[in-house]
Length: 470
Image (cartoon, rainbow, N blue to C red; front, side):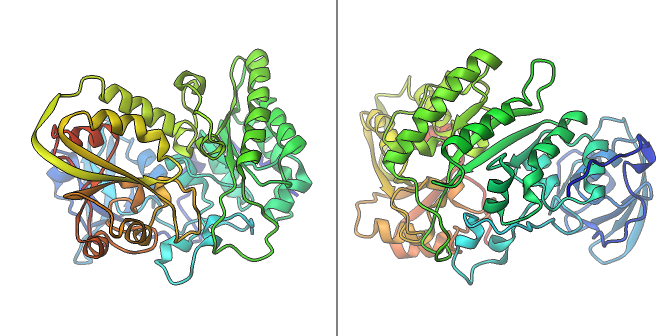
């Protein structure tokens, strides 16, 4: 049974000096130019053992520890020698250190068995990091990853409250206890409303998500979940800031007899009508739509995306809610004053997932009016995942090879960086860029964002993503 944690407001408990589990020295990946760390002589490969006698467990602890004006730092250098360094600085000045990992102890992994878990819907034999079931509240606070709260211990709740780790991003899926226990396959999952009440009492805000599984947590259960979460969004205190409604994503590698059904066009249309009705009601009572549908619902339904302003302050953009609308808006702004002609004629291909393909037609047609520029837009399905309609970020190297064979690719193909593991040249299937280039006999350019895409295609910029071989 989940119980409220009573903690004492004691600043000495903010960072635990004597921890029973192992904390690895925090390995430094890079040093910022003209920083304190560079001036002192920190180097890539060095590791921080402790700051003022305390071992940081993660980036959160590190940021708190370096907020002091006087720092006594124990450092393990690349030659495994220990140095003790004293630094005096202004309180709000950073050291300019970037770490290899955000967590210096072990990652908190998921203890649920959700049938729709994407990690369980992958083939065997790929890189180990693809199979880590992250359910760590610290990564939620730092990067916006979603967690379920089922694996938190007493000290975790105490730390969240003491360090005010807010906002957090919570996978709710259903507020009905029996439904949530069924979805997560975890008897500890049914107390989600009690946990959110605890967040409210401790002034911790959250963003929530509901992954909709047809015939399990949809219909009346979905409406009940949204309205019960909306009770935590008051004018005086807003604990639940927003709710994302996401369609379940299924691959051909998913376990047999998982009881899940894919989202059809008809089902997407029905769900859009239901949520838009709830949004209209909440707009009146709360002054906000509060809940938003992921872009995929509209693309699957074959309907136009809502206008940009309906997403209000885009609270769930990183979760695919309004991200395509935002992308299209930026593209529209970037293509208002295009040149009539480019200096160096080029013919290239722009590769995206089939789900967003039609949304990009207007932009590509506008760009192709430029004299000297020809862009072939290819929207690919994913043979790898077994999905005909797929978002761009899930396309693999194998999908590019299969989908682009014998196509007119021009002098090069352009792909967005979301297809790759961050700061590497690896696709989700572990193929690297060189392998795909060799198979397609063409060059691949990786682009960072919509501004970069337009500027590069029309010759304003040579910017591409810096990647490393992994």
